[in-house]
Length: 151
Image 1 (cartoon, rainbow, N blue to C red):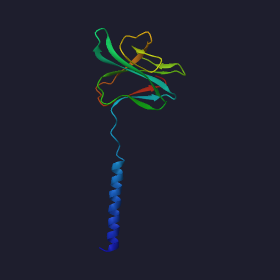
Image 2 (cartoon, rainbow, N blue to C red):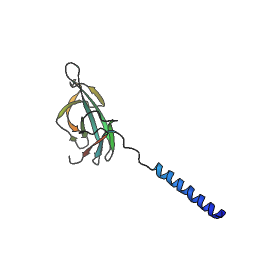
Image 3 (cartoon, rainbow, N blue to C red):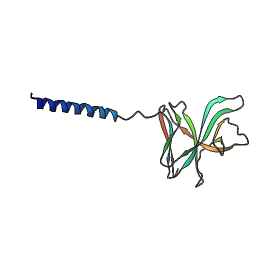
Image 4 (cartoon, one colour):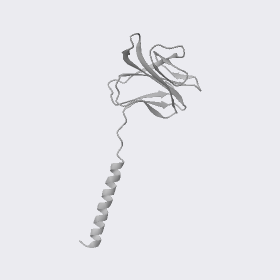
């Protein structure tokens, strides 16, 4: 084997190694875990979330509700990152510009401004909205709920 042949062989091997390294770096990352919402409408919506912890304070259930998360059209957001610990999660969304809401059957306390409420009892500064109860089934890793224009 001549020097030229050896040089071509080494060059080809170096290219294969570089190509293999590049292919390894393009390997997709594992999907994130959690409860994700996606806004499949064409405009911004505001989202609130709630979780029935199953605990009580002696008088009423402890439900933790938080809002408002602004979500542009065509984007997604993890409301509860990490492994899914519950089967049921509660969500509500509204589009203030069009007075459209995505509501369900579970009454939850919210506020007009950003909020975190840790009670099932609404104080006078709060009001109730009807949240959608989302059943994630036996999913433990990743669940996506979509807010759509027509539903």
